[in-house]
Amino acid sequence: MVSDNEYKSDDDSESLIQDIPGFSAAVEGAIPTDSESTTAHPPLPDNFGIRDSVPQKRRKLEVSVLETRARQREARQKEWSDALDAIKRLNRSRKTEFQAGRHSLQDFRARAIESTLVLVVKRNEKFVPASRDAAAAHGFAREWGSRAVRKWVRVWIEKRELPASDLGSHAKVFSLFSDPVIRAEIRSFLCSNKWSMDPKKLAKFLNEEMLPKAAKEYMKDIDSEMARGLKKYIEQTLFPRIQLKVKGGISTETCRRLMANDGKKKSWVLDGEQPIWHKGPGRGLHYSGVICSTHGHLEAAGEILEYGKNYDGYWNGELFIKQLKEKIIPVFEEFHPGKKALFLIDNSQGHSAYATDALLTNRMNFNPGGKQARLHDTWFMKGDKKVNQSMVFDLNPAEPYHKYANQPKGMKVYLRDHCDYTFDTLKVNLPHVMKSVDIKTIRRWELRTRRWISAYRDGLGAKDAQLRVRQFSSRKYKSHRRVPETLASQFDS
Image (cartoon, rainbow, N blue to C red; front, side, top):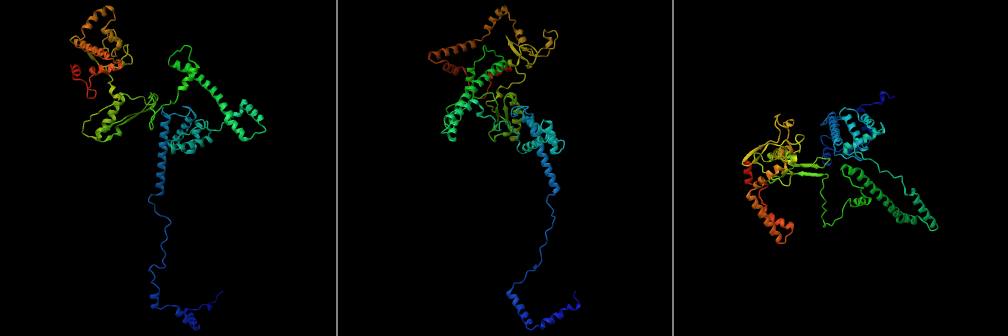
């Protein structure tokens, strides 16, 4: 405990310091004067000894945490919705080819992915319970199956890839040593070389002698087995499907030749070129493109068709007309407002496009009624008179075909209206038909016959003679698919 007597005032301390001999002189020498301090030491800054402000623990963000989390939830929800739409299109498209076909393991996995995404996106369920319900609904185990489903869903969202089956990827359990014949041959080799046997010698015997020999024997068996299987398929499945009967069937040797001719063929090509294969009616892409002399390729006006029997079908005139109305004309008006278009169409099915009621015999049935096109009315010349011809039955109940009222006539009725198919009628009509041939037509065919005779006299073959005659008989028009004025005037009359 300290008493009050031990504390002294400042004045008392100064007096004590001054009483110490030599202390005051030392202190005075250590403290510089005003002149020395200005020359030896620079002046101190104004903020000397003042600490910077301490940073705040909480700062105001440009985007709040709650808003950031909300944006992340929206992005995640959109990502899952897009994944759901993609898997729906994949499962419902007839173009999708699963491993081992429809109703296979990969198909069930794709459906499990779709069910999980539906429960999460549409019903707002949690991911884990949704995967369990989806796994149980599609025949997978509830626990380990749900874990696999969650893994498949993540891969689908990130990469748009379906889980592939591991069938055939595992190690095979069959070994060549399971064959008793191979075991006996190896045993015989070991016994005959038991004093000079080593691993290298045994490996050489297996790889260079025994295995190639066994492979050749196996190929003989599998070749015969494949030929017999192909023979069975052709006779029992293919021929009945195409309604073909072959007496005695086909031989196994024929099936072997079919298998030998199947696959890639060898051919000679120049360096840097690829062989051109035959274009068949299989799967492929058809592109109907549009190019413009001022803007180049108009991508928005093009149409891509994945043709094939089991895909989008084949390109025809109806699809070209649809493209012309819905894409080509609107794109042209966008690039050239107020202008008129001139379309040059080359190598297209649009050349063979006809109206739905065009007069085409391949759209008519032989009998009246039924499912056939309703052709428009036409006319024909009978002597000097123009006779109108209706292709649809009238509503008159007195007609013999009154039960087909307002239905297409068909070929049978049209032919019977002009011929009764009797011999007497044939004798009457034949002279009239011969007289109806114009003299100009007779002279043209006479001239054509003379040109054929002249070509054969010059020693030309059939093909070369045809080319020579065609030079005189064929007329070339400079315009594209031009109709002559004489023919157009006949239609106008």
